[in-house]
Image (cartoon, rainbow over all chains, first blue to last red; front, side, top):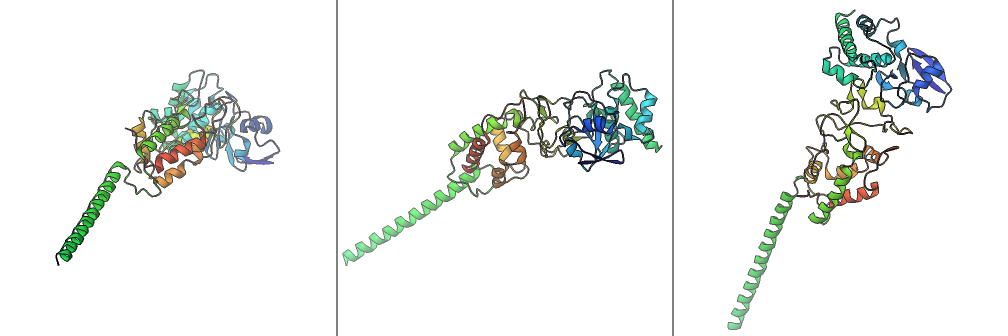
Length: 154
Length: 213
């Protein structure tokens, strides 16, 4: 039995401990906001937070998350009011949207560790999240915007 | 009387010769220890060194060098701040930065992709619980180093993480060093077994840790 705290709720799941966390989130728990992209930790579509770090859930075995805290896109802002979510809407970032939950989860770690990032900091944090629609410039703009929202404390 | 005087002179000469020999031997000893210290660029007292032999030591290091410059070792000892990847040691995709502690930055920390263990299948990130690069203040670069440069760097506590020769000998069994031989699917192993590596590593250090010219 694996115990998980996902988005502040506790779950007990009877599954193979080697199952990737992404499979558990989507197919067992039913949280489908996190996407399957490449399956080999190359694209960033499946990023979730494990104890606050932006892990790639497609290669993270669920046993690594046993007894730990997981946050998915559904739990980033419980009322969808995280500064990044606000900024994403404001800048109209997504095109197809498939990679965006991974982008947001990575950006959230960046802002937690660096509330006032430069363009270079954004590149250093986000270079592992691929967007086939090429929304990178809007992603950068939205991260700056979210940082400003955070600074203003709203 | 004459015979007694001859005997005395003979004894005096013998004492003088012995004295001279003692002085010469001491001088040779002092000179050679100074010479050894000069050759041993580490400045470390050679505790545990047996039968220093620069030729054997350098020959062993040339074998060590082949392993250290293989992708399994060099890829995490890059000249820049981004690790290398693959058998061709290309720059790591997604350009993860070293960070202060060598464990990456922000959303691109090593352990975000590199799990505590290898994963089955090609192109999956290799794993280790302690996966990281050398830290920013002790980069321990292998890439681009000549055998002479690398040998001097490894033996210098100011450049090797303050490791003594004894610690260096132990380092051959470090979990991340061993990970080089547990490379996961699709990656070429270092050019010799870990057992052979330990043998040449130990020989290099115990024979004096000489750097090739």
